[in-house]
Image (cartoon, rainbow, N blue to C red; front, side):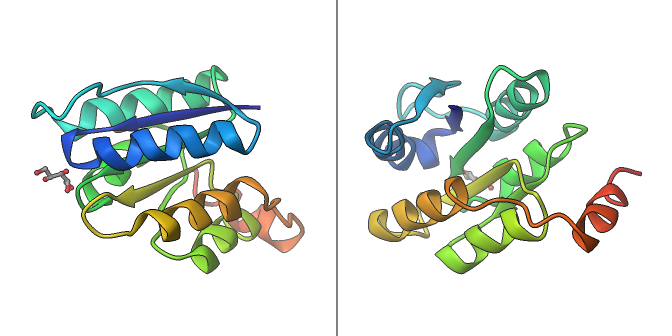
Length: 142
Ligand code: RB5
């Protein structure tokens, strides 16, 4: 399984740490940038990872900006993306179980590294429940 990662400058440090962690968990990684702390615009990176997910270049996406908000909004503008902003593992698990989220976003200025890692692990190891949630998720695509 290949996981796409992306961030702006505000999420760069967290993205770099999560890249190592995702590899430690045994997944392959595709890094869509950014590649430094130079100031950049988060929509470019949220959309790039989202497009990678819908094209099938990667299986899931994990994106980081300062708050986790802007980059999740950007990712959710890509048709077919369900990106949940998470900051604790329960949400990271439930966005897979009930919402079939294919991306999560985290705020590099909001979430500590250990908590972020737990979110990532919960997201990547939880399956969609299907059943009644299939109908609801289908209704998200207008
Ligand atoms: C950049 O300063 C900051 O606005 C960005 O990382 C993010 O938090 C936007 O939602």
